[in-house]
Structure formats: C-alpha cells, structure tokens
Image 1: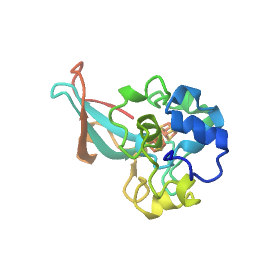
Image 2 (image 1 turned 90 degrees about the vertical axis):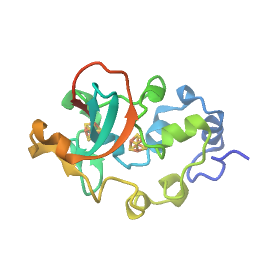
Image 3 (image 1 turned 90 degrees about the horizontal axis):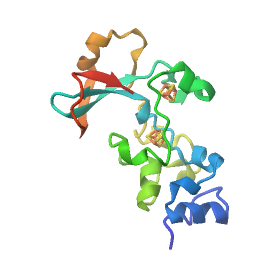
Image 4 (image 1 turned 135 degrees about the horizontal axis):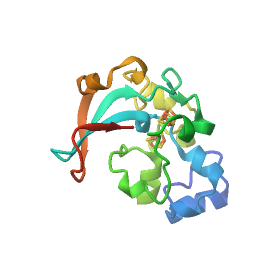
Length: 170
Ligand code: SF4
Ligand code: SF4
C-alpha cells in the first residue's frame, strides 16, 4: 500500500501523484498543502566554506511570524527576501540542509509523512505541539548584527563545497 493512501483531504488522484514520487508532477495547490509548516527552512544557515560545513542557527528570517511560524510576505517573499530559497522539484536534492522531516524530501524518497504532519493528524497545530517547528526556540534575526550570527549556531547540519569564507544564507 502507498504510504500516502491515508492522508486526509486528498483526492485519489493526488495520492497517486505522491505515490509516484515525481515531484515535478505535483500540482501547485497540492505542493503548497504538502508543506508541514515547520519553518525550519526559514532559519538562517552559516556556511563555513573554509571548513566545508553548514551550521544551523536559531535565527529566523525577519519575515517569519514566530508564534504561528507563518511567512508574513509569502506572496511576494522572493522580492522581499533576497535569500528566500525557491524550493522546487529541480533544486530539492541540492538543499542538503533541509530537515529529514521535510515533507518534500520524504515524498521524493517515498517515505510516509510523520504522525504530526497536518495531512495525517488533521490539525496544523500538531507540528508545534510536538516540538517539530521552530516556534519554541527561534529568534528573529531582525535586530541581530551579522557579526553576532555565529553566537546563535545550534548545530552542524551538513557539508558543502568550499567557495568563500563564513557567510550566511537562509
Ligand atoms: S522544511 Fe520543508 S516542510 Fe518544513 S516548512 Fe520548510 S519546506 Fe515546509
Ligand atoms: S521570506 Fe522566505 S525565509 Fe523569510 S519567512 Fe518568508 S518564506 Fe521564510
């Protein structure tokens, strides 16, 4: 049986598209619904290019509303935030720093969505209640000096090809 057979609110056709694992065939509205709302992708990362590693910080994009973990400029986010990544089927595999729980990654790999995902639980709150979103620890980067970003590192999340010195990206 497909790991997406029991997802809530999806048509038979939508479940089939997910089961195929071809992200390029997912319609736009389903693509949007698939996001779990964790906002982990809205946290700044520090790229230590000399060491070839990527660190996760607890600093959230200034456009993220921390209580709801919702983007306040979603429709125009790519104009408002230069570092806002356009997550798409084409670049998903390159975004190695995305969390393993990211719904897009899981569908691409044919893995079931976690029990706290709203398409499983039926509630948008379960991502927060279970501590899977950034709600309880993120700090807005709005008033933080770039030179202080390293103080907000929480963990190492991956490796990348050395290009420049320590820099940041969402
Ligand atoms: S990490 Fe993935 S599932 Fe979570 S908010 Fe970002 S795009 Fe959505
Ligand atoms: S602009 Fe982009 S990075 Fe910032 S909160 Fe919105 S979606 Fe997240």
